[in-house]
Length: 276
Image (cartoon, rainbow, N blue to C red):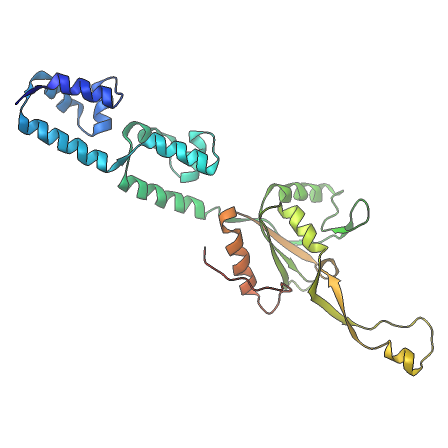
């Protein structure tokens, strides 16, 4: 049994949408020289069998590069090949190669490794660290904000905090961490100001409510006892740090930070750390 090599090459070009031998050679992993030799003569049963086994083996270990890239764009909400290349930590020419040749299982593992290395550099990056709090009343005086945004430098920092999600830490006047929080659904700026004005049961101090009248009878003395009072974070916070983070890691980062300062923080709940 023999088949004309030129017929087989034409069929393969049609199946793989290749315009010439060079394109076909890249897609099926056979050199353009071999393709040229096939076209010149009839192919024996043995040669045809070897060709089919080669193609079948390649197909079993190859995925459509175009499908992979399209799926990645949809999954990670990216619009261009350049965006996907940056996300995966590869070059755009390599991405074009996937479209032409497809992806083998080995290349997929290499992609994951490159993407992992590229991604770990941006899992968490600082926006600002140990910045002094400058308590400022909001426009209507209903609450406080962490910065006086009328100052140019503070206004720029506010804009930056509004752009990102992540984790944040408030410190007392000695620089000790007193509260850790996350901003996952809202921006760092919005979530930090909400926390700054939120009253919590765990945020208490012991104080005496002094009498205004200078009389000391037993009834009034009872009113002068030391009692616990709930206070706000804005009564204690002197500095803050904020870090932008990948949304997939925000929960774990917050939990890890809370567990690092279990005896210092005012956080009511010690989160379970599941690892990054």
